[in-house]
Length: 190
Ligand SMILES: [Zn+2]
Image 1: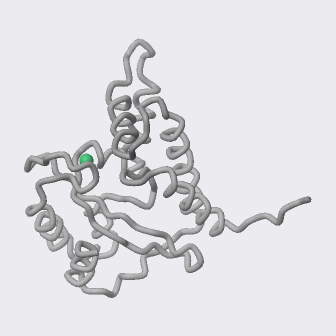
Image 2 (image 1 turned 30 degrees about the vertical axis):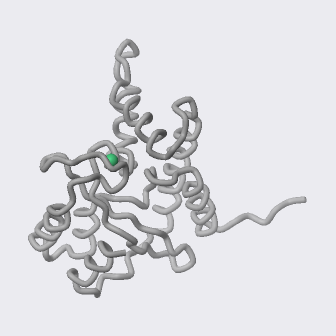
Image 3 (image 1 turned 90 degrees about the vertical axis):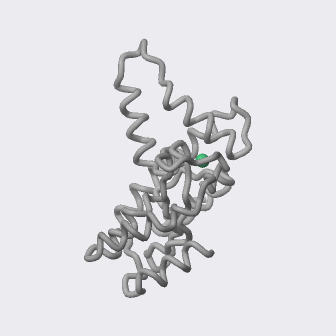
């Protein structure tokens, strides 16, 4: 029996659901982006306000909200998690999290992909130390065994495919008109 081809939105939804099932805490996904980049995208005319807002959110947090590692002042990063409204082809910001450097590099898939590309282009005698560390962090935080590397590989390939399909859909943010303070308080509380 030949199955009807699925639309790009349906493909995104399926990939996103499969990704969610693979990861319980630390997400590799193009739906997670740096918080300042996210805020600058929706409020490009008020960069100063965006910067102070991100600093304000991070000031009170001393523990990574993903892996619970202790955070020092210089090691804090902020990410924004989003979900896709695939039918509407829009992105919905769901939370802003303060996290450690390792969780940041795993969550922001372009960072992870950058490290992956750099290390695979480097000489073969050079051990992929940073990538190995990040893969181990991903597996441990998500409660997988270190031998379960296929879980990491599946997540990264799904994230790349999701990113490619999302680009074709040219998804937009629906919340542009909301005042920045209101949006931030909703994201941080929820
Ligand atoms: Zn962390």
